[in-house]
Structures are given as C-alpha cells and as structure tokens.
Length: 106
Image (tube, rainbow, N blue to C red):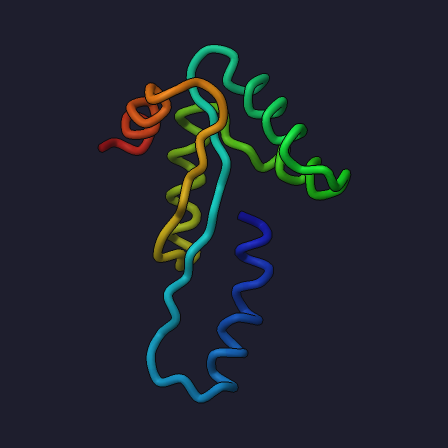
C-alpha cells in the first residue's frame, strides 16, 4: 500500500503533463495467504520467489495473512483511488479463493 500511495502523485502528474483528458485506470497488486499456517506459507513462498534482499523483505512485510488484513488492505487501496487490486495467493490450493471471498465479503 505504501508503494501505491508513494507513486500515485507522480503517476497523476505524469498523466496531467501528457495532456490526457481521461482518468487513468489505477491497478495494484498484493500477496496473500489465508488459513492454517498462512503467515509461514506466505513468507516462505515470497522469500523463495524474490531474490533481492530489500524487495523480498518489503514483500514479506506487506504480505497479507489474515482475513482482517486482506479486508483492511483492500479497503485502503480502494480509498486511495485504486481501481483494481489483483491479489496473488501463496500456498494452499483452491481453498484460497473461498477464504479470500469470505475475507472481503463476497
């Protein structure tokens, strides 16, 4: 979320400087894992996927491992002006879809 908020003013300024007459579509991504051992699975998968120390640490810290965290983060992105939030599941299987739907009230 912090990265989205940090880059948003620059995106908006670049859009305006380019003379665009319409509003840009703002899309962001977040990583999540829900259910038993969610935090451990999330951290393990992200640490193995990303190889840069700083980016890996930031990704792990930003990862979402509770239904409340997912719901709070989705609401924060929407409030910040994000038009679409793509949530990447880590660990588990198809049950992640159902757990995510429950977390965001679908």
